[in-house]
Image (tube, rainbow, N blue to C red; front, side, top):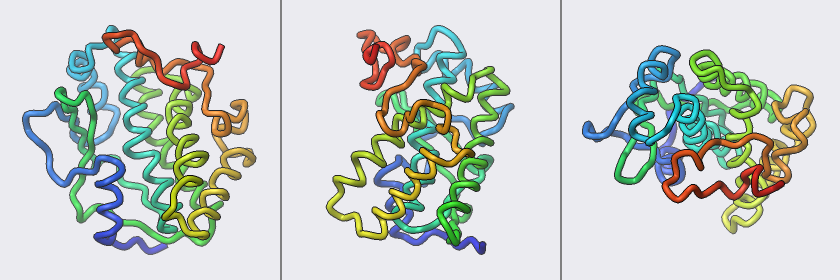
Length: 230
């Protein structure tokens, strides 16, 4: 597949929906490039920013943020535009904004490109392999299990596939067909990380806690927390 630069509409899609920023406010805490070294070196400062009690808690919250910022838009770009957008992790810079308790990402526009896969199956194979590279960083630096990482992603994927797309008035028939094909692959393909996870994509609930309650001042839990589901 030949990758081409993203169109203005596609860039705006990322910026509007997934906190894409073309520049970084230097007053925010940043992690430049996603790698074992950068995450390992950045976790102590990020732990203080989050107010987390342990690096493991920090890593879980960071992986949850990345599930929304990088994992979900990779699927969304394919669903809406039929394109395979899998950004090079080393081109990504993360910025934590203490005022909004949010993490955002940026990358040089020249590095943002996408190709057109010939089938959903080929896209999914590449997408899962690419996301595994991201999760490998957390498994190596923080000893996080696959289940926790993919359940963090499932919280957003379940909402997007089961709620956002079906309720979208602007979704064409092609968009809905690609969304259904992605969901079907995630639920039924033996290579899917959810194949043995009790259909987390279908019901939205999870078996492992993302640990958000460990840093929330009011000790609130997420809507899909396993504690609430029990």
